[in-house]
Image (tube, rainbow, N blue to C red):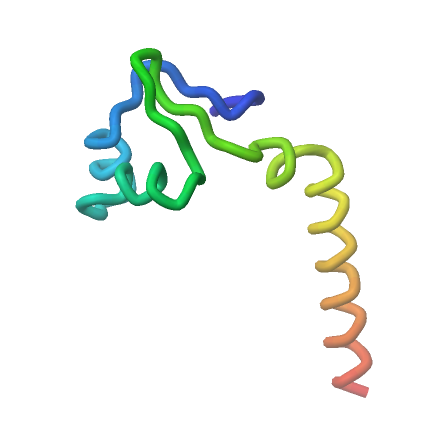
Length: 74
């Protein structure tokens, strides 16, 4: 678990093993989702996807989804 998007001691190969997808670690780097360095991995735009505002957006989306589902049933 990380609060900053940085995870020490993770290699692209370990990301592959965790995801059970060969080449996953290199793909993360290729599409600029993560950077691997000598310390580990840095997930780019971590706050955008996991910060307080992202959680609020998710909660609002779920509330609207449930509301729409309830209206469709009536």
